[in-house]
Length: 253
Image: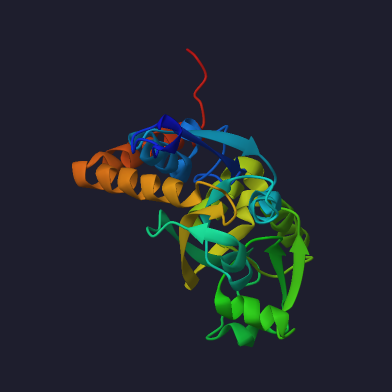
């Protein structure tokens, strides 16, 4: 009789999610693991789900889930290939604002992405910038050079190997601030024009046995955080901690 009974709705569960370095949103070395990490952990915690992390590269963070090596990940947008292999949360956990980073001595203006066909554009393997960008890339109407990481692309930008590099605005600014010298930082800027706004989600592999239950628990926990005002409070607290951690330390008197 007992073996035939369904699990209690509040029975503890666990899930293993990939995590990579994408400050200020994701990163085990960041306060609270970053803005998105904290939201995901707290939403699951509210529904009695423990989150475990598998630290991987940026590209592996999504391809590893699609290959069935990990339960899921977070901070990922819809794409046709991903949609065939992944389940998504109903709720977007954050909307990324994608912009072009460039050298200050080379200001490039454009109205449509197709206007940039003569320029070298960097891209990071596994990242999605917009549906239009992906289509133009596939049709070879943009000259796109792919690299393994965002920092690699920023360095290629500094060296003049590429002319533009698309990245989420906050993440790009933090990457420059924390990974480049002051002289290098002064040579880079970003365009105010938005390439796209990209809603991102929690994702789980389709063949995960309890995927639907985990997504339901996540949604329940996220709504609870929203309705109580805890979501806004923890986001503000995490942002402050991130700013404090990124600020230059004053020498002791």
